[in-house]
Image (cartoon, rainbow, N blue to C red; front, side, top):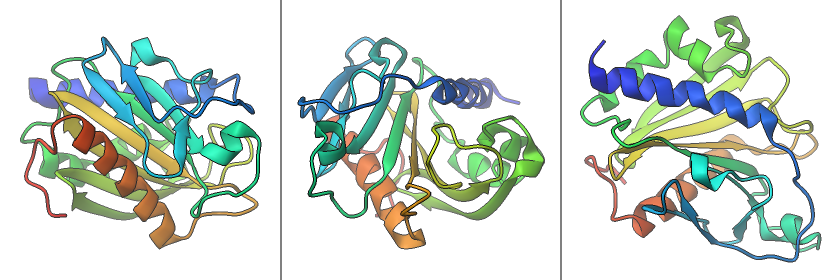
Length: 208
């Protein structure tokens, strides 16, 4: 394992913190930009989405996004309506040239273990992996309980670099109103693009 790959594996493991999300609820704040880590990375929400600041941990590079209407406690939900988390890794954690390596890795038992909320490869059914927007996206079903009660078991996750840091975006819909395959992918890519555009563009070759 190269040092670069060791860095992004460690950053992937840090996603287990998603299970500790607390404090999510109605707020009048409509925040669409948020400084993450030491402020060198700007979290940016796509159209219709806002940051839930009480559930985010900006110093750790972790942020939660949801439909602005959900955060405000009002109606007029956007379509698609999803729950999104962003994790920006530490300096030097980026994929670099390991993009194709990660794409293959995610379909192995070790990769499935990293995708799993419980670290159990057998819980994961990978549905698709693709090189997208200078990074990798994966759609999978996690048979374990979701990170937040009420979310669907299908997840869309994207991995890409921002300023040398591995950045991970995870998307799920509600169990009562799950996202379809295309809607989930579209929401994932909209968050990835927003983050890239706010931070100097994709670091690797983009196919978008």
